[in-house]
Image 1 (cartoon, rainbow, N blue to C red):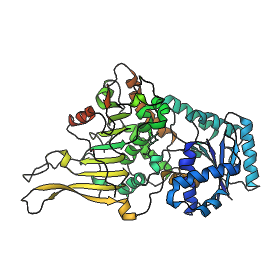
Image 2 (image 1 turned 120 degrees about the vertical axis):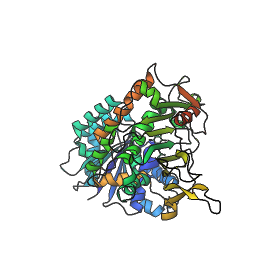
Image 3 (image 1 turned 90 degrees about the horizontal axis):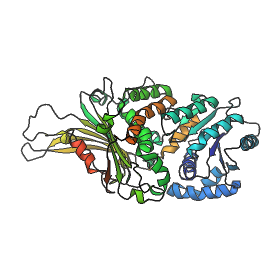
Image 4 (image 1 turned 180 degrees about the vertical axis):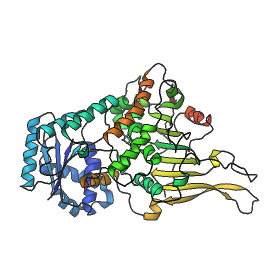
Length: 484
Ligand code: BG6
């Protein structure tokens, strides 16, 4: 019995750039447990063959060297297209009939992927319900929902309520592609499959944590969307908070969806929400010079393309350990890294002992690119008295395992097909994340907001942000990863 994946918003970018290439890779590598049919649904009119042809070109482009024409042909035999409008129940009824024809009396699992613009999520879900497509009598029916999940707490709440009228929480897979990255999952392995890190993973040894998601690209062709969203909605509410949760959570009792998500939610619940004066003190907003000249951006736009925030987690493990989060477009380089900055030694035994935190031990988790981990520590320079220098133990995915890292969507699609929601966000998790971001967004709209600092593209954000960190006796780890 085959699984069927229906992609709503099939003619969009996400489908051709990420989803179909990921499915093709899963097929090519023999990872799919059951045969799969892919059905595209959107308003554009295509025949099955036209759509297959279009996807062949884009998949060949994005799959690069791993594209194999013969494999593609056998994968593409099971690709179909059904034109339809998300606003029309009759088009969903037609979709149901089409799926029944394809299944020819052998109904299997359906996975519905909402790759549409977010305003279509609610109508698509309602139509799925009305047309009987959410009914699980003939097999599992699951829905995958892309980000952004709401624009604030209220809208996320309303979206959850609409979803729950049609699908139970167990049927819902809210995607955050950062959780599909190998290095993010490896953080769980690093912490919970080794014994040496856990005892020092707390306030007794750690001074602070930095989570940076820097992008070299600017807003590009997405300026219209970006100007209404800004960096907090685009990156913090989802990706940065996910990285924070995985870094800070307690060990789950089992490696299973709800056990993992329970621990993640507890981290968010322990974060002290920033409000009013504290937002001014502990958050930072910036905009790169030239942003307002981009097509689709209001010339007077005050949208932040860079932000930093200092968050405190009020629990036994993390009391007094600030988590510094920052992200921006048009920065020095593309790097996502988590820096665990340990305390400096309490007693300076050697004349050249590390003076500040900058020379104290540091564990750098390189999420991307140059995926790997480095442990920084002091070493005696040979033949130079007791002179010391910081060196590192370096683990590189590329050197150790060779080969290409899989795309995040491969893992996530496979998990959703197998019914494993561990790497997907639960309703309460998304809402708890908005509870942290909402008050910041509110304050940023008020007269009392922190000043918007300008920065030149190609730097690490506004200079003032570096000074803000220095004033706290700390320093950003502004290092571009070395690609092997
Ligand atoms: C997306 C954001 O969710 O993540 C984009 O909307 C951002 O603005 C992207 O560029 C970054 O993803 P990655 O995987 O390239 O780090």
